[in-house]
Image (cartoon, rainbow over all chains, first blue to last red):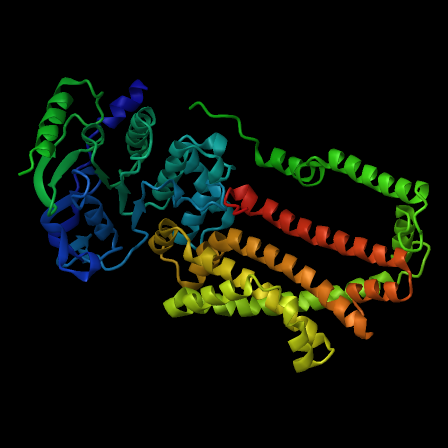
Length: 270
Length: 279
């Protein structure tokens, strides 16, 4: 446990910007075709290679919309999102989305087969044996070894999310997009999963880039190297904070101070 | 993690047969034997006319003879005749249902058309269409197939449509995320996700079809043409071979139960295991 805590506080290796969000606005048609709803307004921010970047905001502030747009699932209305210098136009295996929904696993495949399926999509030339071996490695990494041959319907919510995380890490995407993946878990399990995510991230030789959306201040401070705060209606960039104490226990002094500051930012409507 | 011990795949596979075959099988068997004994005793003790209501043992022995155990084995050809009609109708129904579903899923109006048609034909026993079918196609195999198809299409098409229309958007997104093409999306996401509703639709459709084909053959039997199991039952009446008639009825029940258990086995191997079963 101590070893993992040490790993978790590890800072990302110096790396350039991976994702550039350049004056992005996202506008939806309003209900019954009347007017428009501005979900995201003029957000400019960069996500660095190998960091855990937290997007924190109240519900309905457009943070999930922004993440989905980085994934290429919805188009931006103005501005541009670039990954590795190239504009995002459609979904890609280089940007794997992890949902809050426990139903993101293929119910007809076992834990290992779910991971192996994704690996097969990423590297079609890989032999089935090799896929399985690699899948097992990631299943073990997230601590699902004993459940490797079970079907998703026999797993708990936390185990399902672990499997989804294993599947996403296994295909080595340029960036993992996590949309409140622990939002539907109970408090104890949520904390455990945050700890596990820090551990899995630290265990990778080449550190993964993660963009993580949440409305939970403690979660943001526990996970994020940098934390972006969004305000609601329309979703704007409110503040950006460095978090040198990432991964430290929640009762740590510096962490508490940042939690308080972020909480105030979220409460204050302006 | 505090996890409840879940049986591994191996253990579950060993339990499969016991679950399908032994689930309350003993109690059911006892009830069946008691019913048979009650039948036998009633007929033998209460001086019932054995010609009109034969003892159960006669019926069983006629059934065995009909199936070739110490007899002619003539029943096989009748079963085959009926099964070939229903299998052919089943295949036709599936093809039509798939086409209809394809239209209904892609077009809002077609979905309404399907929904209204299903609503109209659901309460109508399709055997009621047999007189018209006889006018159109004569006393032919085509008439039988027509009414059986009319019985099967609607439950199959409506389940398929519901199955495809209710696929989780998360799984569709997953498919897009992993850059699946149309074919891969179909085979790796849509079809397995719709499978629970597909199986239940086919199961209900087959059940409707089986009742309809036997009923239709009975009507054909009255006119002296045709040659399925329903025809055999009616023919037994004509020649006062009531034991044969009952043997035919027993056979209809047995074949119905066997096909039902085939569907249940498919469910057990797929949707039940995945926890996505629809009923």
